[in-house]
Length: 528
Image 1 (cartoon, one colour):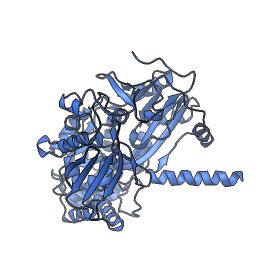
Image 2 (tube, rainbow, N blue to C red):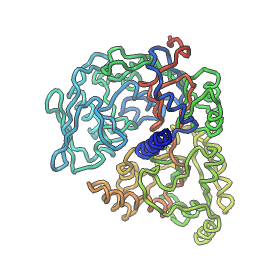
Image 3 (spheres, one colour):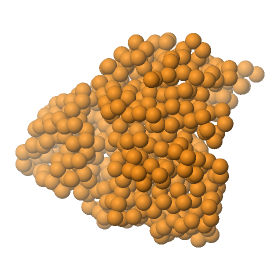
């Protein structure tokens, strides 16, 4: 009997893993995980201190543009979406209660939750939802994420607790727009805070925690919402988010007790934490990938032979092992295992092929790589520099601050740069905007009639088989034309002290502090 139960539990865990984007709980002994899942009733009180990788961008969609990795956890603590999405892709009510699609698929009627207020006392209702979405959809406001919302024609108020979205055409990923935890537009802000222009630095939502203070480069503090509509949540009195850009310092802070929990991608820290009984490690695979982006409009990268040669010169397997200590998977497509495309023509490390293609090109190749001015960025650049040198390519390293790197890529002022795909549950809309010849975020300056056809097919089709075939075609063409180099699949890691409970996953790099609590004896006094 014991064997049967254990096998069933493991099978359930495997199914759970696949459906959440291959969730992996690394370094956590399964018996310990089972024990934690069946632990005593959560304790109330205390302060959780979280170490994050970088300073926060902000929380007003028009000013911040998008959620940085550190911002995601804060946004989910303070604000809420209309829906969450379960592991089968089904919408789960949050601020909304239901979503009904019309027969022609071109309109969605959303019923909203009653009796909810924003932290500033403003009632949550249809006016708040319509005001938020009309602000995002207004071209005059130049919302960074607007290209991803082009299929949405308008939103209107039906009654005080009902809204209706009208689409230009039936669009399968629309549910993602309402529920994606990585999309800044999915979170509903207080209309009052938006009108007063304070939302970016002092976010106001309906969530389990209320914003208290943000001291730049030092900390961002949220405190318990005593009137939260989900009775019994949250458990913590407060959460302190501390930006610690240096990865070694962040891990040292966890070890010393300065932090209770950290996000990291530092392979050596992750490996060390797995061997430390006082720490727990959670890992979650996602869509997207760490990448390097080519500017296909700038010589010599406007010649596909050069890009293909560099793809064969690049050794992703070595990079993942050397720089991440094998704590990331190798990426051969951008879907993180959520689509089974089979062979998509990934260009393996092959210096001989690289030299042959460069010989066909017939000119010296000298390039510049933009990389972040961090230890991680420097290490990646130096590895790429050595690999390219082996096939006769000269690579100059140009370290820049992350914000400057993003600006230069977006303006086209680069040849080759470190980059990353956004990890949306459905990657179709992302690639439509980033690789279609008319895409608003086509920073690679890539143009292909075949790619446009594939992207249009997946954007407009309601047939899952058609969409899958088109998206697998996109992955194949990315590899065929060498638009990006993969630097490892997207895998998030959370390291925590053993006394931190309620953290069961690291999906999208979000620390879900709503469910977190501290074991008795492990509580800290709330921040003042």
